[in-house]
Length: 323
Image (cartoon, rainbow, N blue to C red; front, side, top):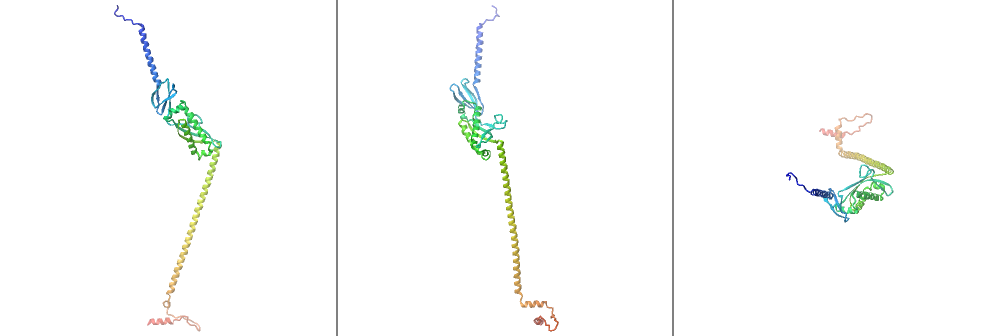
């Protein structure tokens, strides 16, 4: 026998080895595929609703993170639990819908107005499974369109029909918004969605109503201007009256002062005259006369002329004084 000759192996054993390796690889691939098919990721801000196809029941709610399901008998639907916002406005570049998506409402008079509106809502974690069953497993986009959008439009229109267009456009706008919010809270809760807030961002009026409103505002402004002018004229008249009264009072006070001063001067003069008259005795008068006499007797001419002044007492007083 040739020492270098190799033993001959049966052909069947080699084929079986390859088959076994193939089966093992296939099983590994199937297992790996099953793992990938069963592996789900729940992102933060979401919950996963697990539905069992065989029993046709919700079997659990999964928190954010990794989770595994049976891909043959189970499915998982993710709902956001954070606050969501639906914007319905006229501006085409804003909101979820291209073009004019503002909300049209009818007022009590039958007038039509459009509102720019944004509504916020959320899915509560403990209500997610019930929401899934209420909406037959519909994704959140379907719930948003068929609940949030449609119910919001309906509530805005229903409450608007109770008001006149001027009221909800102006002084009743806050009241109207609050009533709509209350109605949305009730209707959303009935469908296992939590209402967060409603923002009535603005109204758009038809051309006819816009012109009527502008005319009314112009009339109100004119009336307000006239009222202001009247008030200013009234204030000016009162100011003039006060000034005139003040001037008259000043004149009266001045006249009274002058009268009082004249009276005081008269009283002083009278008192001085009284005192002077009381001080004029006969002796004082003679003394004053003597002080002013130059020692000469009056001279009178003509027949029968006699002196008018009796100087005898003066002369005697002078003579006596000389002694």
